Image (cartoon, rainbow, N blue to C red; front, side, top):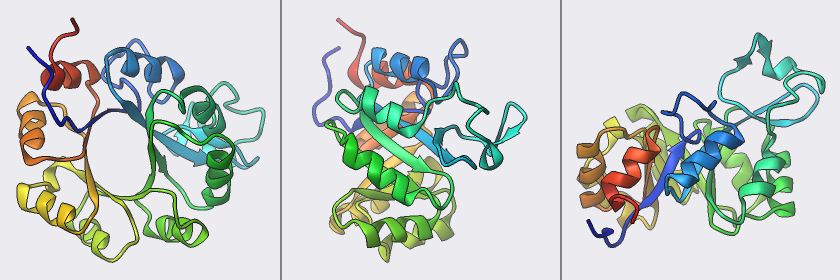
Length: 223
């Protein structure tokens, strides 16, 4: 099978999340995602009480509430600066900010370690996106949408990316977003039929838990 032309970005959801032997949102998961052939990955960022931009999805991890964590808590988990330093030269990064008050730290980390393969800073929280745009007119931003009420926000926000749940996406939406000069990234897509349909509709990126399946479906087996 030959690689398909004009492929969208293929991204892992929190790395190679479908692979149980590695923990999501960790370097081993990010590494495996890239080994599978993805262009990059999505990662989640939370703020600790001591001011670290910590990579983790849930508000509470290992019994520790992240927003109350001190520098001695969860210190084995990566922080945003680590990820930018280690992956910024070889992966497209979708940096999701899970909470407010990460804006300054994110912008500083990006200034010190600018990703070379592309990136987007994204959030479900419209206030976070607006705050980031007010502080920087040039970084690529995305609004994440899981419900139709959230999806409606993209038309009035100064974003470059619409990051929509698969259930919200149809071909007219893809066309409308492209006509507005924006790009669309779809999550979380784990079925081959959906991957192929989104490819046909011309989406700009697909996020999947099953990174190996995503790459095999859209690019074929490694030669």
